[in-house]
Image (cartoon, rainbow, N blue to C red; front, side, top):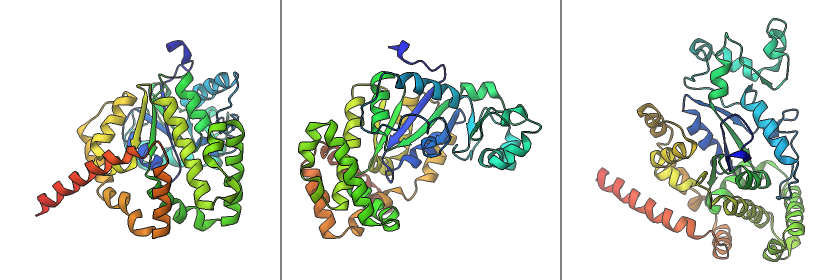
Length: 345
């Protein structure tokens, strides 16, 4: 199986839907001194990831593997404009450059890199990604770090990766559909025309139905769906596609948003273990600091969604194969809350 992993670099992928905690996982992995974390490079036109075939529903041809490996090899050996802000020490970065903000300023400013390019060849190659010059850090240590790339709503890419590059760690975070729907409505739908969102949602569901007859039967009358139903159905399709491809591989780590909120250290250690990263007391302390209010956030949707939408979520879960994911999580969370109440009392 190792022959399938053509990239000479170590890398891992954070996957999931938007509004489901993918940033949270990326921030957690970024606490390691030996990771280089990149945030959705496929969403920036002109990057190598954006040039990959944008195939969302699994119909990837045989040439995709060569393209993917080339992009990973290129990107993993460079810093990029969409890298997660380096908030803690990294083995590959000079500490003075990090603390002063110079490294971050150079990474986020194409204009600054163009100006410096007159003196530094590392900045002339590509407007979005660049090799690390010696005065900012160690290029060799950057190449040795675990490259972590976050990709959202890319079920075709992730399912292919799990099947064809099974040794690559994939951390797939999934949020309860009630929590996802609440966050999506407040942070996305409220900023866009609902009619336009509904039309776009139906269009992608039609594309899924044309390629997957079993999902076509499950969707039923796509044209009759509300905007929220259409969003939940695509969420379900993407979630199940990734999970079905990954559940047989030890490199696949499905994380529930709610369990990460209730048990942040336990889940973070699990993620680090799957990614082959060392754990430390310093990382544990930062995880605890980052997640002090997480349980309240995870459960807030029950107060914010009205009865009609809560009923929609319950009907939706009742006819899906993933409803049981949260049964155990909610039980564990209730025990966790009870222990906290006893400690406070």
